[in-house]
Image (cartoon, rainbow, N blue to C red):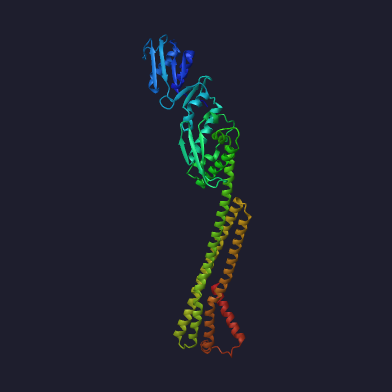
Length: 458
């Protein structure tokens, strides 16, 4: 895709090329070396520069030794003086350079300290325009180097501008260090970095300076791991270097090794963290469900204290001899049994909900564990907790069945005592005559009563 053409830049380049060897460019100043009789093309381009003179730092044009005006810049007029001072970061925002080496030498300081290339530039020796479809490989490499310098500056503990670039300081304790020692990295020779054949891409490393986290988990920790990898790797490389390269050159040649060291540190951290976090989550859930199961049984046990109280009160049944006393005692026993039965049913439903919830939660944890972890010990611990929860739920279900029977026991005893005590009155009321009851008769009566109760509560 063709780049957008800046008209002022386009006309300036055209005018420079039209004047040929009669114009020069030194330190961003275009200057005529001798008088020129303007052609139609030269006059058109020169007039456009004159009309946009305010966009340059300085623009001086004389025609026939007089200051130019819109009317006298025409074909066949004599251009006796031309001096145009370019401004790469203000006004026209472009400049001329002999070649890319000249560009890097002149802009090295500014580029290292964070400034960008001019919007446009022209290489005189190569007749190369930055708005053409062609791209110099070194310019592409410059973009990568600038990204790395920006990243390394942001994660440094201290960054300081120097007369020729920047000085970066990293304060972190290396693996072989007893104390944290500052590591200084000076970046000052951009051309030296451009000449490096292969510089590792920055990829997702640049995200370490982003704080929107978008899942950027352990943001500060990741920066620390990268600094640790940088300090350890660079110190070893500098120590073993025998070519007297600058630390910045060694750094940029080995960015790939530093990245690999970082990934190793971070993978170990994440894996250990994930195991620890997963283990904690499993234990918390196991404890949580154990507490819930225990609370089910505790609630039942507290309410079942009413059963022995009812049994004690049944002693009064042997002494009463009027219908009102019978009514109050029997009613109290039955109401107590009903309330206990309803309460136990609520706890049965609650235990069922706990069972379903625990199955769903632990199945989910198992799936997560198999997907993210390689630790068999952690998964075995999860299986043990799940088995323990299942056993406790089964145990509680068994005890609840016994509690269901016990809650109706005082009612059965009350009916039995009432029948024994008032046997003759009951038989006379229904006009029934039987002999002395035997044990089998009592057993049959009790069985019948229990079946009635069971059908009622079932």
